[in-house]
Length: 118
Image 1 (cartoon, rainbow, N blue to C red):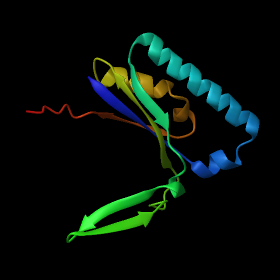
Image 2: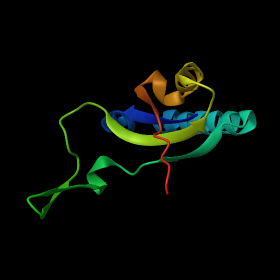
Image 3: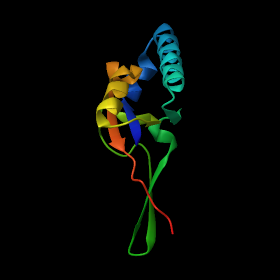
Image 4: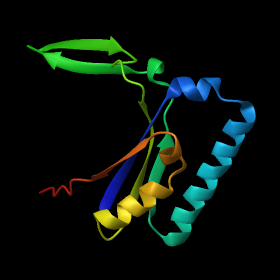
């Protein structure tokens, strides 16, 4: 079953972190990604640009509304994701706990909706 690991982190803390810490975190993520690939569960993943670079779009009464980011007064922002293919939620949670982002943020684990077309 496919799961998305949504990485929520404090962008402000990352901006203030010493360069050595960011270098180590980058190496940790590289190792984590390689471990997923070696285990055969990695499907996709990427880091997102900071929240202020995006936009939130909704349509109300047929009219588009666009809000530039960030969107909510929260400590953590959605900073990246992985999509993995593992047997069950328990296995996905084990991989989420191994994510470097879990040490300083939160990893949300969500099953993907298996859509059937036609």
